[in-house]
Length: 419
Ligand code: PMP
Ligand code: GLU
Image 1 (spheres, rainbow, N blue to C red):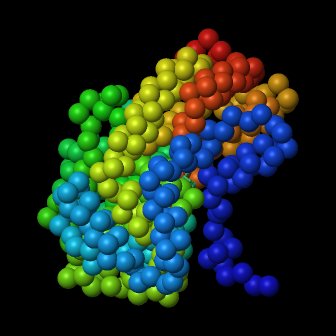
Image 2: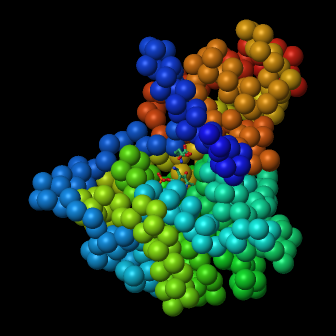
């Protein structure tokens, strides 16, 4: 059977691929420490689950309006106005099958295939952005953050990447895979650049907005580009319930686009109506509950736990020889460089010549799962991603195994005494 080239040439998601390997190994009884999946280990707060159960039992089992019902869209718009300073109303919001679906639709609507449209992507960046930009017919233009600048790009870099073909820029703070948060001033200075280019739209993926650690970098707060009137009309804000509310399996995300007198969001909802229609209708009251003040203390409890784990993981990793790792200030990821171990050989005889071979050998020989950096961008080729959405005991055990693993490597630039 023929498979269209655009699908056949698409890479599979590296995060999901490692996640599947871990599940398969665990099913065989192998004791794996999983630093792979970006998925909170907490359960969804009870009152959110209860609202969905109640709605289901009350018979909320029919099609809902494509973008969600009035109450859930209003709850999201109220949140975006109050917490993010975005001037929007319920009709500017659509509830999607995870943030992934929202990003997919935004890119489909912004990129004109066959025209050489360029979309700027600050890297390292989450593995799904490039394939989704390319699937929409765009050219992904990477702008590399450096380890020295905590993986943040500068306004000068952004300006230099803009060409007459640039149609958009995709921002993600706090970031997957770096765990790095732009301070509000840093993000504003990028928006200053975009403000001078009226053709350029912004997709701002804010799915980790509630997971920021001022304990680690004092004064850090979240700032939404769509709150800036200069770009508000051409910014698509993406968010979702997966990370902050521990609801990955529910597949609930949303998108807000107040610009163009509502024309853009109407086009998005048209697309959604042809592809998925609404999310399951009895989940909609659960969205309202998640955004209520009742759940906020639970979100804060989980955020504080992630902040503590970020500190613990950084302390432990800083003793592992040959790794270079900036501090995580948000999300639940650390992204160390393993460049010092390229060229080494494992006790089982595997040559480490890439992040992929490092991650494969670490999993096979030390039973620790990490995501290799290659698919997070060209500049990420010698990094691996560790998700600390797991217990402190797992973090301690996993880094112990990682430490033993790198100390067993032979013949690299890094030495077991470095670091
Ligand atoms: N954006 C980023 C940066 C992510 O890490 C993820 C993780 N899945 C998503 C979007 C998609 O989240 P979901 O589809 O579960 O809402
Ligand atoms: N975003 C999470 C991760 O990066 C979940 C998996 C995925 O959708 O990529 O691990």
